[in-house]
Image 1: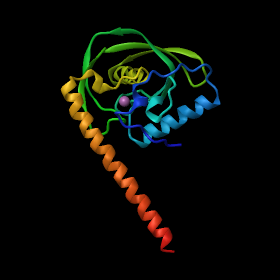
Image 2: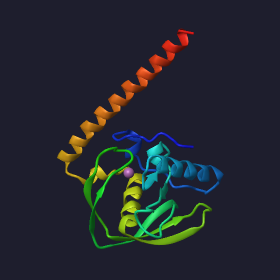
Image 3: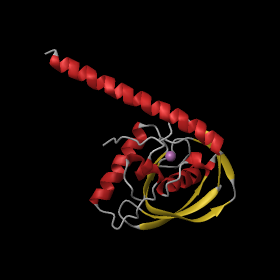
Amino acid sequence: MVREIVIWPDPVLKQVAKPVDRVDDGIRRLLDDMAETMYAADGVGLAAPQIGELLRCIVIDTSPRQEGQRLIHLVNPEIVEADGTTTYTEGCLSIPGEAEEVERAAKVRVRALDREGAPFELECEGLLAIAVQHETDHLDGVVFVDHLSSLKREVIRRRMKKLKSERATETADELRRAVAHKSAL
Ligand code: NI
């Protein structure tokens, strides 16, 4: 099921997500919803807090931008090694329409549980390494604009507030139209 993506700033995006105790059907359903939501929004990655679930779950799919990649599920991910630095112009599904350069480690090694609850480790570089760092940040209540200057962050914050109020107005208009339509029957 495609879920609604929380738009920054929002208190849920500032909280530290809880570790998953057991990878059961409920968690697999959450991972499936996350993947569907990510694909529907044309994203490369999504963290559970972005759909309002404070659990340490991530989905990433950097294909076709990165060859040989596919959908990966990471439960309780932990970056155990990081090497080098790189900059990449990042965006975020919770901060639509914004993109800024962020400095990250060029390579990371991540340890996590898979969709079946089995532990694995993954060497990541390129876009995958960036996505892993961006998404694990989300689990710790950090978004990419937290890596920018406070000036840039405040400009983006104002634009997001405007976007949210526009969306709220649209929703109210739709509701009014629906009600008007019903009473016209
Ligand atoms: Ni993001």
